[in-house]
Amino acid sequence: MADLSTTYMGLRLAGPIIAGSSGLTGSVKGAKEAESAGASAVVLKSIFEEEIAAEYAEALTDAKARGMSLESYDYYDYEIRGNRVAEYAELVRDAKKALRIPVIASVNCTYSREWTAFAKELEKAGADGLELNMFFLASDLARSSDEREKEYFAIVEKVRKEVRLPVALKISPYFSTLAQMITRLSRTGIGALVLFNRLYGIDFDVEKLSVTAAGSLSSPAEIALPLRWVALMANRVSCDLAASTGIHDGAAVIKCLLAGAKAVQAVSALYKGGAGAIGTMLKDLQSWMDRHGFKTLADFRGRMSQAASENPAVYERVQFMRQYGN
Ligand SMILES: Cc1cc2nc3c(=O)[nH]c(=O)nc-3n(C[C@H](O)[C@H](O)[C@H](O)COP(=O)(O)O)c2cc1C
Image 1 (cartoon, rainbow, N blue to C red):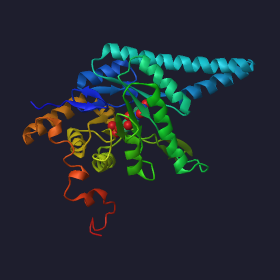
Image 2 (image 1 turned 135 degrees about the vertical axis):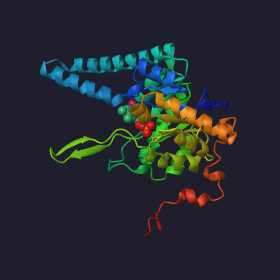
Image 3 (image 1 turned 90 degrees about the horizontal axis):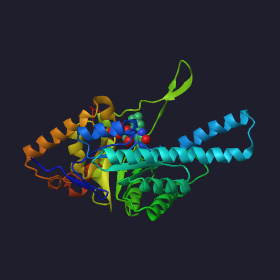
Image 4 (image 1 turned 180 degrees about the horizontal axis):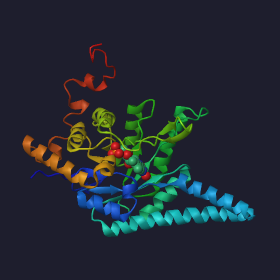
């Protein structure tokens, strides 16, 4: 039997499939199911500062309606924030008690001081690693790309200074100079970059003329984006790469490893097929390795990265030109 073990952000993993952050990993039960199905690590559902802020706003409206004084607003803020962080730290502690695989906590903040405060709490709670789920929508006309990008570095630097845990950074592909951002971010001392987060999108209900949520689950075709970027960046980064988005079957796992990923993260596949989807992916990876005579992941990892290719230009091709008879 082929050896599926790997290392990822400084952690030793028994296999390359990680249950990515989602509602499914927001409870010990869900995380445990992923472990039983063969996940080699779990990224817990993120703690969102934005959600805490929304809860605070609600409490504020309520407090105002009841004619409470201004000082108590601060108290609310402090209390709500504290409760939420404590609840999340408890999830980390409970997951650590119940699981044998590494438990990675995930943080999404808006204000830079909070990233560090949250990270420290989660380190104390015993998380094995920390994934920073970082994205700022570039919709602010007053901010240049340079300003926006600097925030990523400032936050990573702060968190890295304050915690000793291995840190992964989960980013989106929406940067004007993506290759440069990926390489520069990889040199900040982080253990891994997760390429890419799939963001919540909006849709319109044209009958009710209201804004709705776009479909939340990915399709297998979406593997194309992380696959290209893992393959392009595999030999140009100073940290591990994990692929995320569109990993639905064993073939997708194999492709990402061939591109140079140390691990993959699956979410939509688990929503669609249950945690058991991980077992099927692992089985397919095993039998593919056996058929090709690969004994370890290192035997083929990165073999199809751009750097290893005899035809590197094909990885950068973006126009269809003469396809479909045109
Ligand atoms: C319902 C749902 C909840 C999610 N929640 C989080 C989250 O809390 N934090 C995060 O970093 N990503 C979250 N994601 C994004 C996933 O971790 C993942 O990056 C994305 O779904 C793409 O992977 P997939 O194609 O395997 O689904 C969520 C995705 C879904 C579908």
